[in-house]
Structure formats: C-alpha cells, structure tokens
Image 1 (cartoon, rainbow, N blue to C red):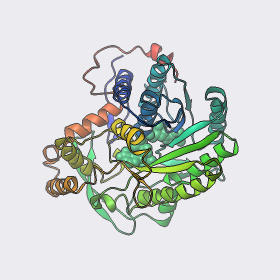
Image 2 (image 1 turned 30 degrees about the vertical axis):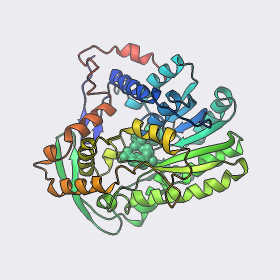
Image 3 (image 1 turned 90 degrees about the horizontal axis):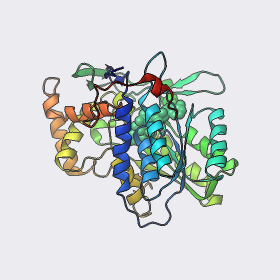
Length: 398
Ligand code: NAI
Ligand code: NA
C-alpha cells in the first residue's frame, strides 16, 4: 500500500510509519550529542503523554542524552486496523522502543487512558517490574480535549475560548492552504470549569498522590509539567482565555505537589515552553498566524527550536541551575520566543498578514512542513512511493 497524507482542516487522518521512524531517529541524533556536567540526572523516568510533541521529546532527550534513562511511556494511540493505518504516536512508540532496546535501555510502552485507574495500576506494576520499584522523574505531558468524570461516567470537555470577550482573528487551514477568518465567542462558566478539569493540574496531582502512596517515587524524585504563557498578542486567545486559566491552575498545583513531596525531598517543576507546531497546538484557533510569524523571525535569527531542542535545553541546561527560575519559580524555555527583538518583528509581520499574503509574510511552508512531519510525511529521507506492507505493520507492537 502507498500511504498519502490525508488532511482535514488541522487534523491528519493518515500517517506514514517510515516517516515516524525518521522523526524519532532525527530526534535521537540531536540528543546523543548533548553534554551535561550534572551527576544528578534522572535514571528512571515515567512519561505521561510520551508518544508525541513535548512528551516524546522529553523521553528521547532523557533516554538518548547523557541521562541514559530507562523509561515508561504512557499514551493514548491506536494501531493499524480496518479503519486505517493508526496514529503517528503508535509508530513513534514502536520505533522509540526499538531504538531504546538496541541501546540496552529499558523502555516500556503502556497504551491506555492516563486518567483511568486501570492505567495507574499498569504503571505501578511496570515501575516495580521494569524499573526496580521507583522513579526519579515524572514528566506530565498530556494534551487532550476530554477527561472522563469518574463519578458520572461522562466526559469533561475543554473548550478553547476567550474569557469575557469575543475574539476575532485568523486560523490556518492546512487542508485548503488558507487563512480563515474566525470569531470566537467568550466561554461560558461551564466551559471554563471543564477546561480547567481537563487541562489544569488536578490529574497531575492525583498521579503524584497515587505514585507517592504506593511508594513508587524515589527519594529526591522530581516532576515536571509543561505550560505556555506567550506574548501579549496571544493573551486574549490563550493566557487570558480558558486554556490560560487551566495553566494557571496547573501552576498553583505545583505548590500542592511540593507539599506532598516534602517528606521524600522531592520537587515539582513547571517548564514554560515555546509555541510550537504539535498535534495539540494546531487546534488552538487564532494561534497559527502567530506561529507563522514566530517561525519566520526565529529562523531568520537562527533561534528556532523544535520540541527536541527545547527538551535538550531543558534537561541539560536550565534544569540543574536552581537560580534559573522566574519570580514565580517557573523554568522559562520560552525565553528566546519572548525576547523583545523577536516580539517586535513578530508583531510587525502580524500587522501585515492577510489571507492573501500569509504564505509569504509568515513561514507557511515551514509550519506546514512540521505539521506534515508530525505525521511522518515530508521527510526527504523517506521514499514515499515505496510499498508499505500492512501485515508487517500489524506484527509490530509498542
Ligand atoms: P501532543 O498532542 O503532541 O501530545 C499529547 C500526548 O498526550 C500524546 O502522547 C497523547 O497520546 C497523550 N494523551 C492524550 N490523551 C491521553 C489520555 N487520555 N491518556 C494517555 N495519553 C494521552 O501535545 P503537546 O503539544 O506535546 O502538549 C504537551 C503539553 O505541552 C501540554 O500540556 C501542552 O499544553 C504543553 N505545551 C505545548 C505547547 C505547544 O506549542 N505545542 C507550548 C507550551 C506547552
Ligand atoms: Na506530549
């Protein structure tokens, strides 16, 4: 079978396994060259949301960089079936595992709903059996639109909306190669509450409580969750909107986890990341024009980073310098994005950007390319005319 990209709006309905393999390999190569002078690198790591974006990059950085960590990765992905080829994250899991095994590293993939108690039990068992009973680091990198409410069996659903005002703007459509005008009405109280349930800190805390009660956290264990703040230009849609309120909740949760971990001298961290093209971020209406402008300016200045560059800089740069935190105690790997010179140029491009000129004003080809690569397409090293053997794919398991 020949696999073609199938794009609907901002969602990819197909993925290319060989391209996913290329993506994992490229990231591994970028982590192998890292150096660290710290002798306190985490050796046993649990990653929640390990199959794509920042979670996958964290796993690769920690396994193939100087930490050489054994890892357990939890994700929600699907394999090949009558319905289709499966999801990119499924193949990322498979090819990460193959590479880790070759390297002599422990790598366990757990595919299931991270919000469920079954998955918590599976993780507990895996930490005992595969990691010797405890972890040194828990990376919390879930991004999702729904979370089951265990009391009702129904779902909380996030809504990406401004708060208190209607926002007019543009959103990129990768299917039609267009910049579409959008108007986002303010969130209702219920939409705000549910977004905080889905993307706030409650589940992060609950995971840490579970792992702590089971004595699965090593002395000095750390945890990190990822956040976004962004510049003034995106505040109406992000920082001051529903997602931003959920992130503020996440930031406060750090204090609760720090209290929880006091007895084992553990620590909770928030890393504020740069805006990047991921499966989750292209869903945020109004953010994509900003990405187009940001990519252009940061590339021009030689400062562009993808997920793997961000995670390498986090774990082998900022992490061990306790002084390298902002006044709220957050780790800022959005520092380059928010530089005044960058934002000045970004704002100038955004002021000029229209549905007619966005492909030239912004880095549309770059953003589209990264979007395609998330799903295994657009890798120069992959021969997309090559037949993909579906039965061979069915035999692969994460
Ligand atoms: P992503 O969509 O690439 O990764 C999400 C991961 O969560 C995947 O591994 C997916 O399988 C997993 N997942 C989703 N629902 C799950 C469930 N019910 N059970 C188990 N696993 C599940 O997203 P991305 O962008 O890497 O986001 C990770 C974190 O980084 C989020 O907190 C996001 O807000 C944050 N972040 C993202 C930025 C961006 O520009 N992409 C910027 C700053 C922070
Ligand atoms: Na992730």
